[in-house]
Image (tube, rainbow, N blue to C red; front, side, top):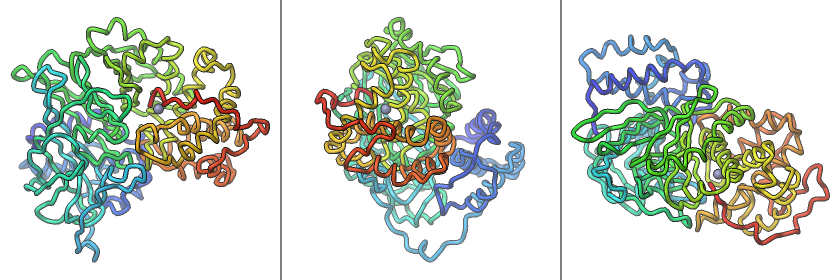
Length: 578
Ligand SMILES: [Zn+2]
């Protein structure tokens, strides 16, 4: 979209207010990622809320809405009607950005990459995205077709910018505006380089709209990252770790989480499902527009748009969490029973780490061989190859992707070297679920957690040599260099060692504390080490740094007899799931 009508803004506000503003007091506004943001001084005095970006995005929406209306004077009363001092305080700060510093007078280009060692050009420097408003148009009922879209990104400059980049690898770009004014742009590889008419001041909020961009889906390919994927029934997203920008312009790095409005327009007869809450469906001239809102901060890699001849199946909620699955219409009878255990898994995960972090959950199954499963936020992605396995195999992996909703999605990695946080934890709960449901022998060929991790320990040194330390993958030439066995079983092995070291009770408190403290944020390996030390009351820096960054596998606490010389070559197969 480019510019919405005032009526649409009003409608958007009304729905947002009804769904999101009311629960705000329960949220926790805390760790500010944007040190120079104008709202900081106010935010510091406010009760904690984790959803700061969401709050700011809506304030921005309100402000933009207000400028389009003759009765702007009632903005304050509308905010007051929201009943939240948080909103009023942040709105005031958003309006009253501070004076420019000396550095601000010398605008410079934003960096082409966010500085990730493994993916140097992923993400961009110089701004922090608050919200994406994304629209994609599917002209025909054709899964292979080119689609076109518009995106409006609301961001805050973190330096004075003469120009900046978005990540985009799609086919074409129509036009670009910054703060409503036409902006020059060029393309260089997967960088969309944008030069606004006037420099953007540090700390200031701005909007960039990319209109009429186009993208064509690719066939799934298990040996490389997928991105925008076609199937016999429609298209889906599998963007991890660096492919979501093949569909839409974005700051495509998990450090820059943001809220999303996702609007999909497709011919009548196709269905469209995205992350988060369904907001509304409208029909016009043979097309249906489905609008979803992801209220929780989301990494771009976790976006999901499932558009095609799919059906949605609603299961009974679990602890109030709606559960819905999305499958190809022609395969529904076969696939839906296979995902049935996910309700038990949601209840089980909540018993382990606390409240599920998103609006809803469910499984999306596509017909094809993607080669992996993927934790797209609030709607995990699987393929029919995986769903043809026995349920004793399916269920722990369903639990793995579910666990990612806390570990990897809600708490995102700061850099991709932190991916062990995602995969180590997801593997930990995958194995624990198999163990506690009595299926570990069929799943992994062992009977106890000790046996499972003793076997992983035996591979420890070989994995470190081949792939690098757990928190420092050596290469990113292939996706499997990063998503390697040493971040899956090796990462879970670190958690086992930590549990041996600090005890089960401290470990379980740490897990709950981690997902609560960093909910809706990116967090680093050093953040994890610091929290583990605090929760356990022990200085774990030396212990965990050895386990996470050492070239050799340290001794296992409580199991001095375990050795890391017994190596089985069969155990280095690429991971089955992500
Ligand atoms: Zn995973």
